[in-house]
Image 1: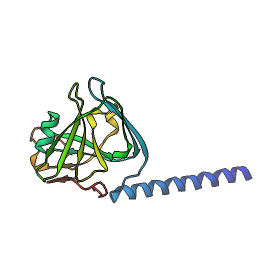
Image 2: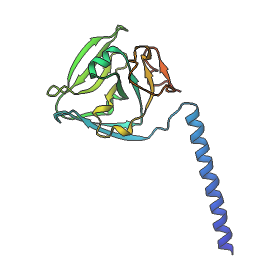
Image 3: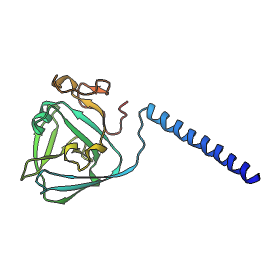
Image 4: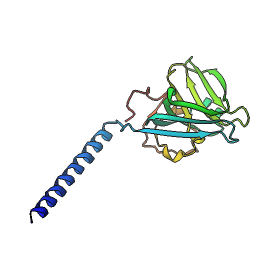
Length: 180
């Protein structure tokens, strides 16, 4: 019977601890913070000439509706995964870049495969330590869940996105800002 009392006590303590962890996690999510976990993202271009890998703390992704992103991707928006540039390794090939001065006056460089033209990365002069990986170039794009959208006033009306997603008239928050 002593063993049974110990087992019941352990189960109750574990259940309470589990509930406490869930409560803390839910509270953190409600105030807009995300749990940081180490992750690896791998991807590449359509023809396979350029392959990359990124390792680092989990990050956020967003939709961008600006005309430059639409033209660069050929779609109604782009999905960029903002990551620490130091964690990005080009495993094979060499992307080519095209630099343009954005409406903000800052330079934006879009990198793509020189063979097939697949968009791969975007780099912004104002955030030299960041790179935005194009989610469509990932081997596992299902791991990505955009947390906000930017340049919403320029969105095409025929591309449906979650209307409850936080939206910004211009650029979204800086990498260290909350998006909720």
